[in-house]
Length: 385
Image (cartoon, rainbow, N blue to C red):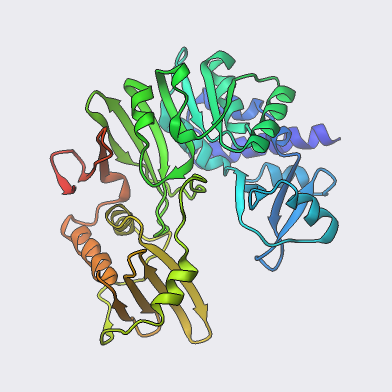
């Protein structure tokens, strides 16, 4: 009974992903149809009705197959503590921050399609997670062509067990994904299933010339950037992808403590309030200008707060610079050594001057020393370096 339900749910998922344009290649459609996602998600969390806490789900739940094969991200670990699921199971929903998950299938499909994989190529995946993505790669290329690196030993062991059960045996490595896996280099393709604030040099060094790298660029501004780069002897070059990608940042990345920064900023003297020139506050779903702002303003974090008198938005930076925007009257205050809201407005103005390009027209060049250049359409048309 359970097998029949999972097969039908998986078939429905593939049909949805194909219909909506996420799965375009027959070989990837076959992989998603063949690999049983439920084997990689014997238990997971979903948000409780209060949208704050997480409840424990396993195959005893009536909607287990439908939840697994829905086009949603599923958290599998909270606060790097594997025991939290059992706590939620025994004591009810728990609070916490997701530290491992199974990526939304449509986003997985988009990234795998962007890799442009061909038979015989070797792939390095950084961020094994549940192992589901590694299984899809193995189904497409064969076990011997796939290497996957996972930082968390407990997560890695769960993935190894699930992959064994599903019949896939890639090379699994426990370590820091930023280091890649030099022993197996060079690779034809590299895919990162977590976000990085900058492309690690090791990734460039371990992908062969003309190889492809697909990764999510972490931004505390919350704009969800994803990039496809082609590697050559001078570095890597490519465009942003049109899809937003909200992956967890690498655990070695120090996230901005927005609460502490906002608390400090709220006690600082302010300039005279003025009206913002932006047509809207920064949002995850806004057009290409937010992607440009994310590229141009690294380490600037955003915090949205919904109050009884309306929504407010804070921008903060570790150097103490801050901006405060109140949506009801579009008034902005700011302080510190930088004027962060001015910088956002400048990014919006630049986007308008460029004739409102979509995010996928913006490109990125990453040099071996870590230097990044932002350009539009082609590398000679530099927007920022």
